[in-house]
Length: 407
Image (cartoon, rainbow, N blue to C red):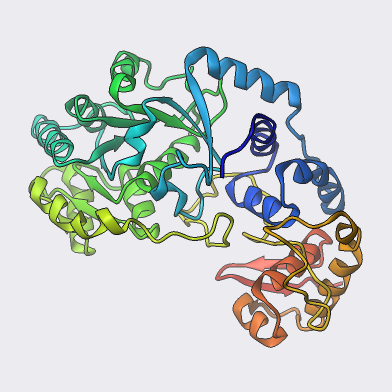
């Protein structure tokens, strides 16, 4: 697919609206079919849930698009040909990414190299050699433009192509001293971010960036990282995304080696040079990450603190249906309903919610077990749970469990 200008503007408006992150975006598109329809529906959904939601205005989106054009930034939507295939495969894939530079580097197989900002001289030398060797082997090197290992990996792969993932907007580079490096990167590589123009990176934006770093890549190499460092968050994202994780061993006397050494003990690939990475990733280069349909449900990566202030809606909730007898798989086409059928949504939603509510009690039950008991398609159960949640009738619990709230 390829969005036209109006669709791209509506996608940007939807993802820039309050409390709409990747999961909520997928929910809304899957349920209402288009960003335009979702934008119309959000105020009513918010009213039902008792929450105030600011929907990004058309003027705001137009200003951002204009500011991006002035900097040579283009917006690429999930599912478009230029959207990186590996990134599309993760559960929290950004619906829209802003790209500055050469889009072609995003089509090559990628490897992330990340590590300590306060890197040792040996760590920086190793990162440089690794990045140069991986570039020569045909990989695009991805990193987060941070000080230390990130910057050295970028600098070493300028000739072969490197991708810098930004935590803020394209016009708010962090750290500012790496802006000259970024200008060199975009000459033959690219800078990627999901944040709005004018956005200054905040604490929670760095883990968001890290999941894009690992999501773009078939594998992630940790060169140096103290325990509890941001680089280990990237490694954890990579594991949860089903990607290869490599760790460069170091002296147990150096705290910067604690993270990689721990990862090796936990089963990460030991990386002593370029060949270790190339050999492990060779089978994946042609096959690529496992892909799912554009708005398929999935479990967003769990890394502790939520990365977005999203409504806790199901991952994918296509337009709901009433019950087993009324379920009609031909009713919807790609999430888009005909006008005469869309008018039937409210009654069907209520009936589906009642059916699922009858199976719930105050004791938490696994959603998968609920699906089996109901004998309904997964998406129908998710839609009913969404309606019950918006009505304040159910609670969600760890482990994908739900329960009725006591009246």
